[in-house]
Image 1: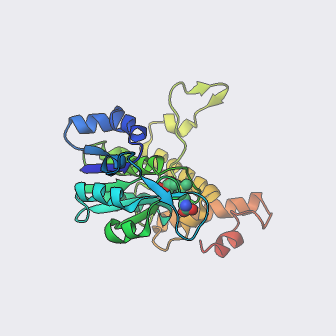
Image 2: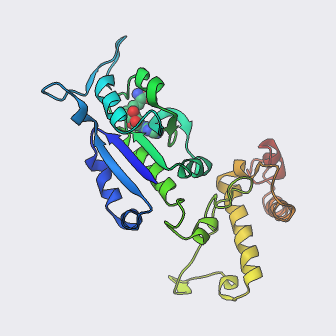
Image 3: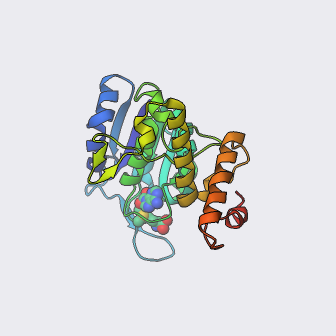
Length: 265
Ligand code: SAM
């Protein structure tokens, strides 16, 4: 997969591409990248890249011409082109999987108040937000997206690690990952759950599924509101909810059946 990142400050993203798993993926020929400095496409002697917003208001907007030239040089249109913006579609694991299937991707990082709408209309295929908050620039958001995507490219990391993690099974059964422990089994007066050192694979699998369900119920109950939960998982979920009801009669508890029903679980 080839990724081109267009930015006014490409130095911010360079370290990521030159380090760790990404650097190895590049060495192995699984990934390639190009960091494009949008300012190189400004033609005036000061390499001006921004100007005031029509209609007034605070802040500057990135000029359309240098960015358009940078996009043309990067092969867009013709390549899936992402603009990272808080007003975009919310990024998630399914979206990461979709983008990981592309052979090539262009990502535009905004600065100041963002980019001119006409550039979006002419080149951008995907406006993506990484969350409901505003960052000062798009480089960090672009890296979040690159990081979520490239590890899904075949052979970059083992398929087994991907299936075992949060949202790993994708589609219907998107659960948060269960708690994990490593050596020593006793640490700071806390012991690892016995089942995990029992060697009993079926019991370990059940413990992990239950722990995943408990965590998802506590932190992200809306993820459980899907019709496709397998019977076995639904049954375990009902058990957990019933136990929660026995121990916590408080109907405001988000884990009670009523609270869950109101959330559509
Ligand atoms: N005026 C913009 C708005 O209110 O939607 C915010 C601009 S922000 C200060 C500058 C740049 O940071 C944006 O153009 C975008 O590239 C990036 N950015 C900020 N928050 C982001 C988010 N949640 N997701 C993706 N990109 C973001």
